[in-house]
Length: 121
Image (tube, rainbow, N blue to C red):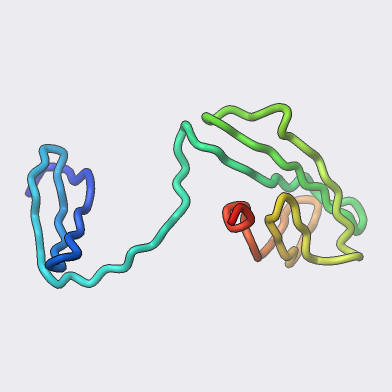
């Protein structure tokens, strides 16, 4: 098929996996192994939550929280927060939890323990 694909079609009844083109033409195969994964999707008209690293002063780091809706910042949903790393290397905001591995005034290395999406469940 030379048409660009627009979607995949999975028929559970007979284990058929098909590529569907922009002109609705199909190319199908049986018994193709696949795994279904749910991933968050970013779209221009979606909702996004972000944590922005603003640097370190002494043993404290500064993080800004922002919400975006329809690709526009929501001014009423901005907040600046300061965390003392002497108290804990794990920070949290609105259900998200992040372990700070390393933080300087110019960079941050971290591990996400729980993201915002998991906090909503």
